[in-house]
Image (cartoon, rainbow, N blue to C red; front, side, top):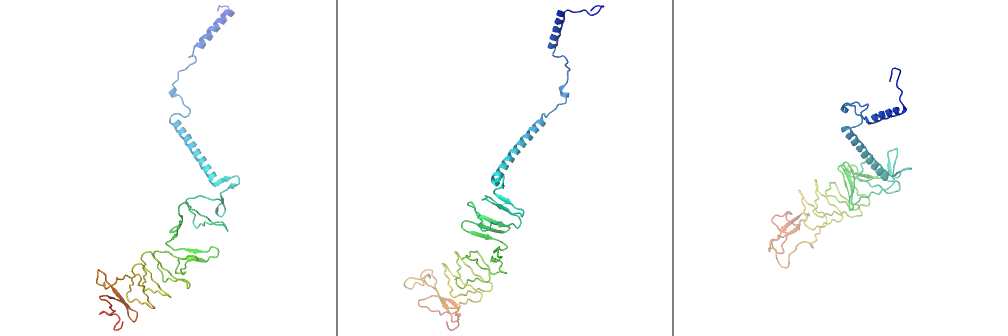
Length: 307
């Protein structure tokens, strides 16, 4: 540069100068660099605990989505929802739920005063897989098993025809007399309390027990019939506070009574033998047998002079 102005450079000098500037610029990596403390910078995004929490939420939502998909598939397979609606059941505005196909259920809890029934002119088939079918409402329970059907209730029960409203069977003895339903030939009970037990005019009344039968009356027991028979494998005991009256022909079968062998063995062993005697008025009493061909004479004679 001179006083007359800048010195003109040749083309070669300009090229060398441009090359040196570019070389210095390319090798200077700190050009325009300003030292900054990164800890003081504002960090964006989810880092640290927030990032871990976000990952947990995403995984939880994914699991819920999988569970929801499984439940949807199960509902679709069981209820069989298709383009035309539900193929296995129908919902009506009256609250009726109708099953159109065979349904497999465990426990059903109907609502208050609900009714379970079938279609008209079709049977309602309920099957238990090796388990009893139990209908229970409060203290009343109906159990249908393979060999028996039992009904348990603390408040009584009543069966009636839903169409005619005629009472078929009722345990309300104060209003209705107890009758066995049509087709029922026997009644099995552990204990019964009633005023009287009768049969119709064309059939016999049979009372059978496996063990011991006790018939007790607060004001006496009256047994009446054309023919009354007692068959027992053990002893029969008659007890009364006042008297026992046998009105009619009394027959005792001796085929099952114990008897001694030939000869007089009344005093042999620990056997104690009695003779059954009857007064003219029908009073029965016993006399201990102390000798052969002994009659009914006794010092304590309940019949008076003649017996």
